[in-house]
Length: 240
Image 1 (cartoon, rainbow, N blue to C red):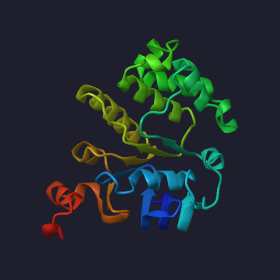
Image 2: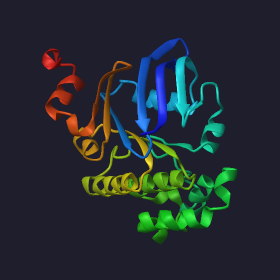
Image 3: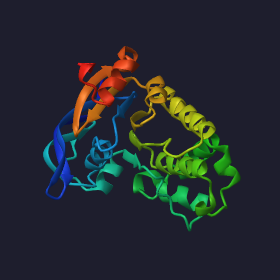
Image 4: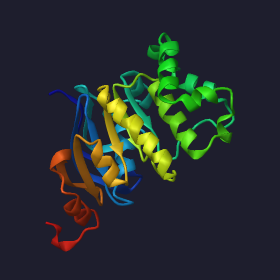
């Protein structure tokens, strides 16, 4: 099995504040790797460091064997690394259709924009219905669908997804995880940060638990004991 993403002894943070402490993990090609952990564990910081949005002060990040340490974020996107950020971050004053076309902006994605948009509309029929609607008027769930769709327009080889269920109604969460399961079945390499551990485990091929900027548990999804995972999650002393 090949490795799509390889993070080794990674250190990163914000200015003088270090957040990640020698984080190492891998994401196999075509599999879903789930990262869970409490607030402040460093999960979002890890994704930002992988994308080159914050500087790496130690260690290395490799995507499909190529080191991204020191690479510009837009070069990483061109290599097929895409991040769907927490909080959606769509363009609120643009239409749904124009938001999707922004995902097709990288040169390598332009030729296939019609095919990719048709694929997104097939996954998210509600976006097709609202293609001319201003994105800022969408519901939270629709905005999350748009954020995912925009990311898929970039033809990702490795897709980093940060807290896609955050703040959404249960019925919308069901829909989002149905789509993630479909993308997993189609062989997209996914790195998913998610606080809803029970839902995330259902689609996880491998699980990493982070706490205080470190990986404290790394196991195949089918081997994870949810009770033990929660004990480690909340740093219970008897979890070891």
